[in-house]
Image (cartoon, rainbow, N blue to C red):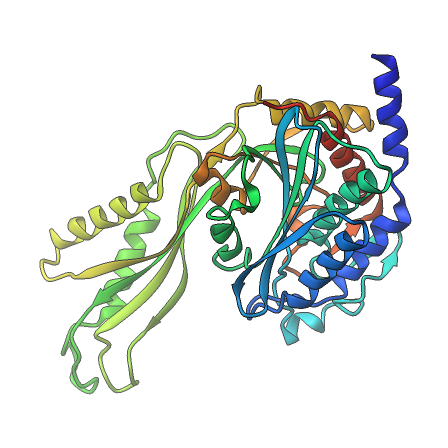
Length: 397
């Protein structure tokens, strides 16, 4: 037993900090922004990295120039495959945001122990760390107990088209556990909020705006609905790590011309869910608000166009993937801390085909999607070490 632990510690020490930083820098310097979906150059970089190590790599075209990249390091066949996943795309940098950056948003500059740039946290840091972990195994001729699969997906920042296509592909055959390398500040997160959003259109009646009280103002009626939403507590059981479910209006548009009473007003409603709820619960509650308003305003009309549904999920803390991650953290000297992931990830899509997940990666979620995004160099190296320990110790069946 001591020899095995010693071998693992030797393997961990093989992680090359310079390689980790180079890979993450290279990825950050490729502006794979989405929208509109400029992932092609970053996809090609990942393919070239693995081909240089003679690791088999496949691509899956989602749309022209947008490719999932899936590589599989062959294991001994005594354990089921273990998958690591990260998305290739990053959110754009607006002109206004760019002015608030202290460096070029795509510089990959390293300063004061931090690697700077859009996507460094979300999530080229975690993706690059997983790439180097797999590459280190291959370079040293180390065969893990089971296949190690790395899935780099496109379009996570929009509708998760990459993950949705991947779950229909044989490229991840045999996988039933996944490590999502999103930023968790090196904490273990085995539960995740869900998310659903929809366009809710409230109807009215046009009229000339010069006539007071003419027509039916759809904007006024949408305000009535929004006030009902604010005063409506979503029924749920509070989650110990993820808190409560909630909804809010995030977009509003309506009307056709300033002199015309608007006969429509569309609000976009975004809801965040904790385990135990479904998207259907949310939109059923919305319809009940319609009925409630109709008791006072009989001709109130509204309809719902659901744009996306991502259910919340939770993996038991005694599951094998959580246990191996805890052991791996201990092996590299990281304290084991459990929290919940408040956003959503590709993990919710993989769950649809029965793949249970855990989220673990470098960087703080609160530092991304904003100016001066930067990730700790120390966390990048530690994450790579944790991933390589998981790959080596994985024995799930």
